Amino acid sequence: MLVDRFGNAFQQFKTGEQDTGLKWQDGRPIYRNYRKIDLSNTELLGEVSINANDYDFVWIDPFSCLWSAQSYSVVSDHYFYPVNFGETITAHIHNDKLVVSVGSSFSGWYNIFYISYLYVKKN
Image (tube, rainbow, N blue to C red; front, side):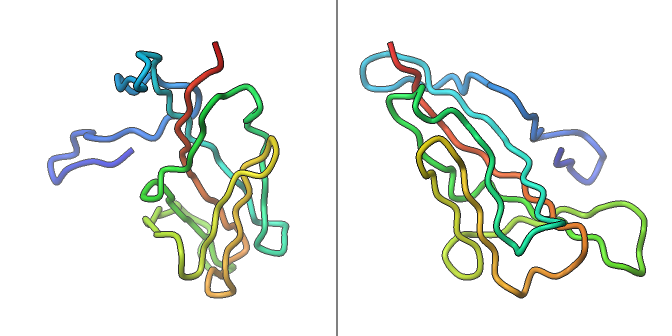
């Protein structure tokens, strides 16, 4: 959740299907889903099943990625940072999976990514 300087929530990152209120050109609703991808025990490549074959259209929100890492010396709260695609992080949809790959500049032993994708369900 992102908060303003007074502590009021202005954007929540909830996992699970959310109706965006937007409509596809044929009137069907556009949905959003945030997914958590745990890269803490991998070679900085992770994937999660999103059942993409159940959608007519699916795409990644290019400005939705949040990253957090916890170092060996700090075992406290996580701080999430927005990151953009194209330089050291890539994300794509392959078959039924959402795949995220990050560069070596993302260090820490607890790499966590939240990323959203939008989709239109099949009729």
